[in-house]
Image (cartoon, rainbow, N blue to C red; front, side):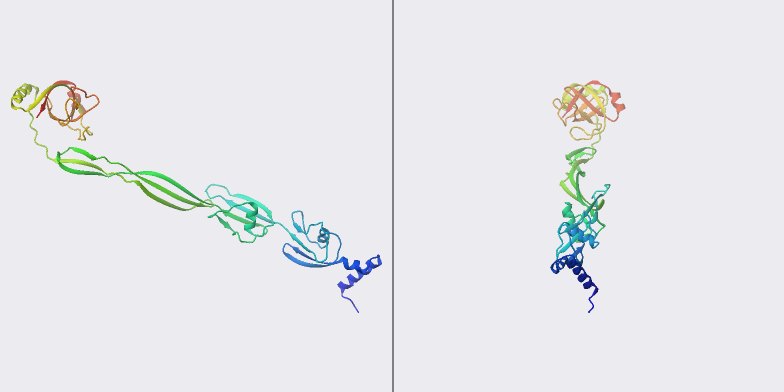
Length: 343
């Protein structure tokens, strides 16, 4: 009877052991069945073997290195029915792209025994936050030479405040002469808060939202504008020569209540008076403690004027008449005159 080749080899080996002084029991102990899982590939090896796991792997040309993970350890003796696992680390690279533009990506390389992306990142302490984009995903299985891409997510909020201009409302009134104006309500600017939310992913802005909130409403400015026609001018006198006659006649007729001697200067028209009127000819600046606002005066060489303005230099018996131009003000100069307070 002819034996199969494999069994013939085993019988020959057993016979040799017997010739060398061994026994059948020794031969049976030398014959082993070992299962090897080489990076997930399983194979069963049967044969005569001695020594430890390292020598067994070399004998059967199974590659391993110091970086590999071998279970049981390389120094463990080989036993019948043993299972040997050889795991080779995977080479994995991660490209971590910051959220904001202008930043270089960070590159990291690892040798790992992790089998999924999630296991690797947990082992390396790499956090992936909500909004970050990971390719491949956490559940994906790793492969040797894998390149992971993480694109970071960032939300930035910028807040600024801007003014809201007020409206100017002009209301006509016949309680004032044409050309006269008075501020009834001063305008107040409002405030608006502008909040801009920007979303960045992997160095690119992917979204923006602007929200506007009024935190103070503006207050409109209201100006009363006179509409009543001015009466035709009826000067009491037109020259200094008539002053004494006016005073004598007025005293008898009761056209003025009192007179006083003042130092009179002049200023050019423009802008507004202290009482809100337009500064124009016919207006005079006074010291209100001497001549109250609203008093009508006859000023020789000028005519009738209304006390509607004041100034820091107008103190005591001093007045400042409004004329049409700077040239007219220079022409007037500084005069000492007797003015009459009209009834």
